[in-house]
Image (tube, rainbow, N blue to C red; front, side):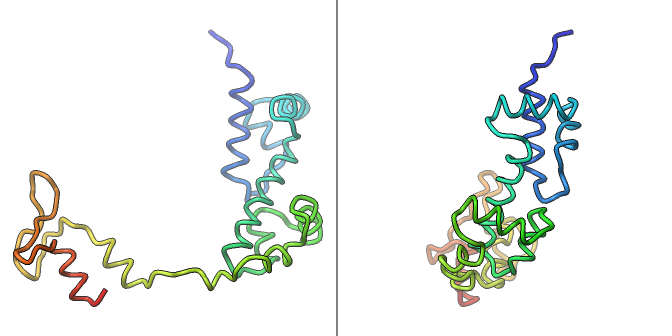
Amino acid sequence: MPQVPIARHLLRAKDLADARYAEPLDVAALAKAAGLSSAHFSRAFRKAFGESPHAYLLTRRLERAAALLRSTDNSVADICVAVGLSSIGSFTTSFRRMFGTTPTAYRASFPPAAAFARVPACVARAYSRPLLRTFREDGAASTSVASGIPKPDPGGRHVQDRQHSAMGA
């Protein structure tokens, strides 16, 4: 039976850290996912990726926190907990070390999340409706069964476009 390269085990742990950074992961949990002892895993991870497993996980968490600070109005404390950290003081210190500023100052350097364009729910629902519905108010078949492409109506517009126009969108 061929032996699986250690890099594959390390990638399994790295993928776990990327996907589940918000969960209470530690080096022991990552080592278990890789099927290695904690000490051997830490040495091999550092050799392969140039940083310790703990530093890698902290970097993922801080990157996600930065994204949340830019795109939400959640409090710094809520973001700290959402990315899997439990101490706001440690979070602020680590964030400042990585980004050169505090989380609050970092957020202030971007437009507020409320300034982003939002799509009204009624518009999102109208455009997410399936084209192949079994009921039609107009009674016309709007889609070619063979091609799945909506047929234009005599006015040159697709039935769904006509529906959006009627809704005022």
